Image 1 (tube, rainbow, N blue to C red):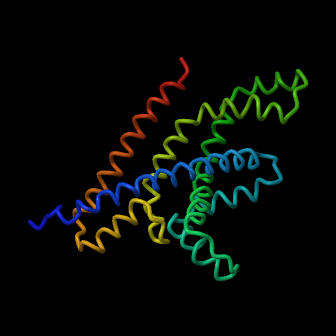
Image 2 (cartoon, one colour; image 1 turned 180 degrees about the horizontal axis):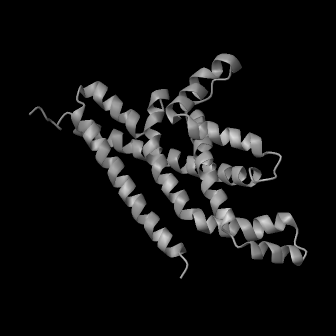
Image 3 (cartoon, rainbow, N blue to C red; image 1 turned 90 degrees about the horizontal axis):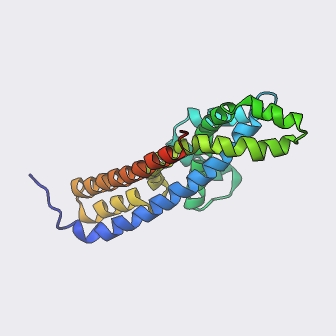
Length: 217
């Protein structure tokens, strides 16, 4: 059995430093995705003039692979626009849009789950639509879907591995760098899988605690 961790151990700090980049990218993408998801869910409601456009955007990002979206945005679009974005900028834009597309459906369900009687009562009291949206609808919908947002963050942590194809030096990219230097593959990728597993177990633990804390009695 040809397993030898001695050549890989000196590179473990390099791989661990990629964990911070992975978490940073996932957190920023989750924040951007949540904001876009709320915007998509509000603008895409029945009767909205923006509904066809929002539906097209959501269908596109939900119906195509994330890897294709990322490479198309970072490598394909510069061919016709002339603008070559930084790899981190490309990753954040694509991940935020992709996450927003998925979260929009979750958030829409959260908004629709709110008791219509509250909205009707607010209208009867003369409350403006804008105030109803931001003071009644959004806070309750956010509470209802926070666990789903946490789950999306966990998913993003795993999906960030695809950004290695455009050169973002997160955990996966640093694992590839380790393998290219040591000519070892089993050991660094095993360590990386364990790191991803531990990260997501920790995040799942806090996600379940958050869900219990926000659950109604």
